[in-house]
Image 1: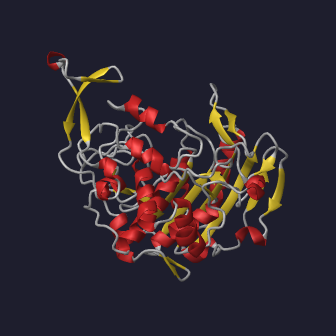
Image 2: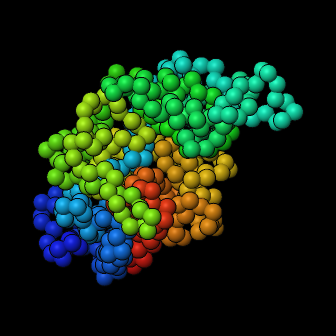
Image 3: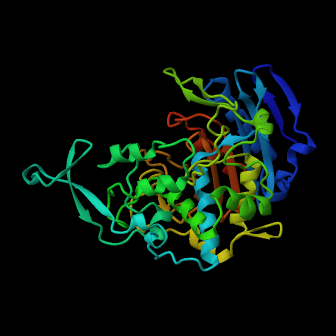
Length: 438
């Protein structure tokens, strides 16, 4: 059984039987993996801890539906010397998107909508969207509109924003730090009142000019917040209620929440950011004042609001790899999961992962391996990934993937953001694959 090390006190404790509850643990060799080679993961993760680049790491590797490796190194709270452990609760940020997308596709299976339906059927504010285009100097007349100091012209969108566009990040929304409407997106993101709902936010979001014609450009955005609000409208439940009753309870995911209950604070990891020397410094302490804990609990952000554990998220990913079912709980059909994990964006560049990736309905999907190590990729993936593997990580360096060909799931979680100076995610993928021996 794996061990957990506390790098501050150098004490070691065995993972208890209770730590592995709900997980189908197996000896690695029984699923074609090497115990010895999996041990390299601990060594590599410990290096990051020892260099003070991350506080600690929880890592999991599963194959053929069984967990072959579960380990924790370092600390979940450096300031208080609390060891990282397999039940540590993390801010999973954009890993929320896959769950939100699954939620909407559950309603798809109930006949609430077609992927080609306009979002304005449910959210009238998205009717008649306008696209901002930057004007060349010779065309800058008095009728142009200034957006963030940039002279632009607003033109009608060529087509409605559809639900497929929202799920694939092709709705035309801009990424907040980028694009013509960046300043407007930033203003929309600001809370107008402490107890506002995501529905309040979505109505503001719909008023901002698009940066692209719908369907023509892949651009990362908060479109999945709109997806989450559609879940609320169609189901008549808050997103929090829908997740809890329709996904978390059936899948036995008791530690996944939008807002962490106070009685679980002792398992909540502290969050860090790199200082000028790239060493970690505290940014969000695990206290009742954290925005992932404090009241009011009214703003359920489908694009990035959840906290969870490695063990809970494994159960969600194993459900997807099983074709929509886990231990008798059917969430989606196999055909719907196949639809979600196939590429819907054609040859459009998916700039955030890199040229090796396409995008499905809530997941990045490996389209090829020839570009998989390109240096232009923000999150370049190492070559062991199989075509058809799918993934989407979180802004605080939490990362899952599933490889249907190898029947493999890998998950690693730490709490550092931003993390682009680290190769920990890419190295973790290689470390998981090198342990396959069949």
